[in-house]
Image (cartoon, rainbow, N blue to C red; front, side, top):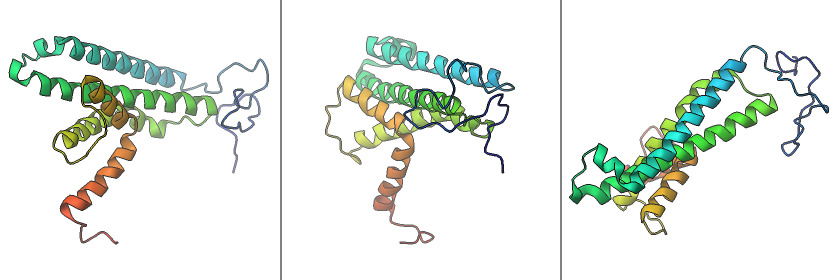
Length: 187
């Protein structure tokens, strides 16, 4: 089995995680990805647009503009604002995670098309997880040691979005406590 990455022009040396050269010789600057650079750039642009949208949503929520767009009643302003912060900050966390993942796999030669759906959908998974984590906090199913001011909701939403995979694993534990272990589970 050949360990060489596809479409390489020069021999590839595996790089250490902390190696800023990514195993390349000096002045070896050309991409090793010859056929899919448009896909990689497209993913980067997509994530950049989502990053911009997440930041605009946080600003819009903070300024109260989102209340105007959705015609939120004054009596529901605080609740709506808190959930909007959870969601928009969750998207920010998920997008930053996806950006970090994208540049690492591209730089290290591990980018492949089979994970593209995961990379495109993970920010939306992060929004959903942040919303549900926020709802669980509001329902007192989860306790946090943070003031749930606007900044607290943004912080919780960001962390839930950035660590959505970990949060989903924790939700399995919570479901087991609330509903008991299923008969198909061993344990």
